[in-house]
Length: 385
Image 1 (cartoon, rainbow, N blue to C red):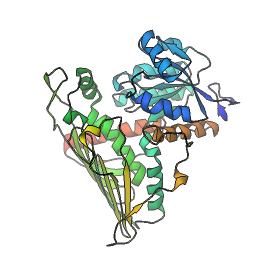
Image 2 (cartoon, one colour):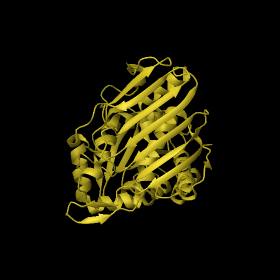
Image 3 (tube, rainbow, N blue to C red):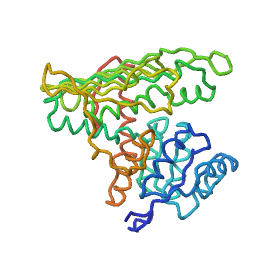
Image 4 (cartoon, one colour):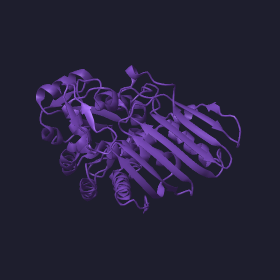
């Protein structure tokens, strides 16, 4: 492929990756999603892994067949043959690892949430702009084949004029199992209900049906305490149940309920209605509690009726919407691979990608708008532009 290097010159080469956050643990997100996704794409080469110490780095490199391992992140950044750094750590550490990668002149991927505050997001975006590096933020769900297919159905008039959208997004792992103190600290520091789940859910909804132009919001704490794996019960203080309703840029009305800690059997349910028909995107069946785990993907079903009052029928995603290689697994790596594929194309075409740090700042700004709406009890305008 021909890509723009960090010196701005076009070159024929793979994008050489150094990754922070991979481990020998198969359930770690970088291990379960990023590594198999990148391995399946001909545009990329996994060259190096860094961890908090050399033993962890060596174990990750051995597990995943990565040639070089570094117990010092800054030593990895100093390697001149690396083009891009993947920061796949806890959100509290994103800023501290992204900033030196930018300073080293590397292209940077950062998991969502893109920093723990708007101030951090702006600092990372502005630093990347000043350094002239390309950026990518981990809101990969909008890159899913199902999103592209449904978006095209709507654009082609399947539902007619869009009238209303109802979206229910739930996560229940902390509602049904004991967790570590470190995981509770992560949820609290990240304000997980709004910034993690909210950011992903709102970005996914926008990819399907467009952005809010004004909104109202309500946020509450449902789960006020949680049992640790040690048996100790500790308080939970972040808002874990969030309702947002408002008007979309199409003029349709929309509501979204996000439940960070909720024993539910439907993690994802989206209804899209219009003057000519409707679409339903939902998770398959009622998942057995033993199978619900952050690393276990949901299977989605699409039902549609192209006329008012018509019977709903199952719809299948045409194969053309899956643009990554056949060896890309259909599980966690699928959306991630499409995201990195889009990024590689943007490098070839010497243009910003659709999920750059500007996009991350915009989504942070929406979360700030939601928090303000909830605090004031007043409807708030929002512009994604």
